Length: 387
Image 1 (cartoon, helix red, strand yellow):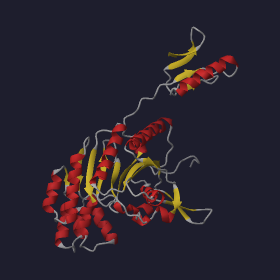
Image 2 (cartoon, helix red, strand yellow):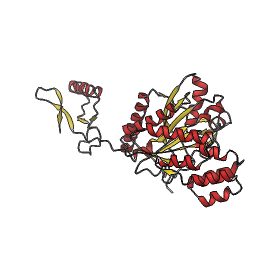
Image 3 (cartoon, one colour):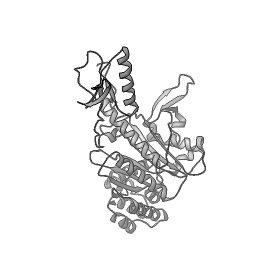
Image 4 (cartoon, helix red, strand yellow):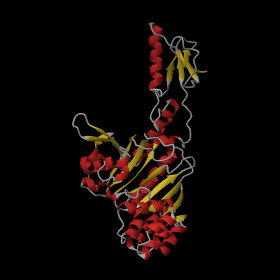
């Protein structure tokens, strides 16, 4: 095997794709800044106990681990940035009011989280802390939809669910541990046979409601059906009301509901959503409310947010036209060279890309598709003309 072969699901990003990724990254961060979100840059590496505090077994299995040569302690390479941002909010900023934070940086996964996925996503996300009302949930949804519009991703479908529904249905069953995980998995895959076997000794109302949950997916009619067939507990009633309110206030996307969708169930505490678009193998964006995320850091305050992989976004976002550049000759000595360099510097300060052709390379392929050149004009000065 060649020494230059990269690990599975790890790849170099070449110029054309890297340029597109960087353009999208800037648009995403600019859109978040327009909503008042402040950029933070958590470290890629942390002590393992800090990095995995409160995140559960799933993130532990996704985290690369190594030994710190300075302290001898175990370190982890982050697999998700949200817990780090919660730590920043709780311990470093410690503000009393609303805090809006965004980030964009690489994360590493021990295994790809879906077929053909990279193990090195470039994770962009935004979090809003300190407001328990639905206004924060709505703001997160509107922000991510504006981010996708800015990157020219269309059409969009928002799938909505609420972690409180299943939590309420399971509250009197006493199920925990591995069996609880199996119940969640059967709900997520809509495996009625497996779910029926797992819940055979549950109280009848809980068992029937969980089995009914599998069929509760589709358009707005799902909420009315859920109100009819699910127990009218305070949590279920509140969850359905919140889903209905949010769906009425979201424009620019098709709204669907899947009340059995529990991906991220250990993370979310209320409304959760996934955003889909043609060409993406799974949800392009995942987000929702996770009020307990800061509890392990000693500050359990409301939190809503979302994240996406910018590298995956490149595959479904509209391609941009490469900004045309200006070709310039190379002069290395004399008064003409000083005058030429001054002209080139002025163009670059004005935002133009100027590519100097090095000696002996005049006939090479133009990577930047130069449509103009800097050349002598009739008066002996330097001027830009079309090619």
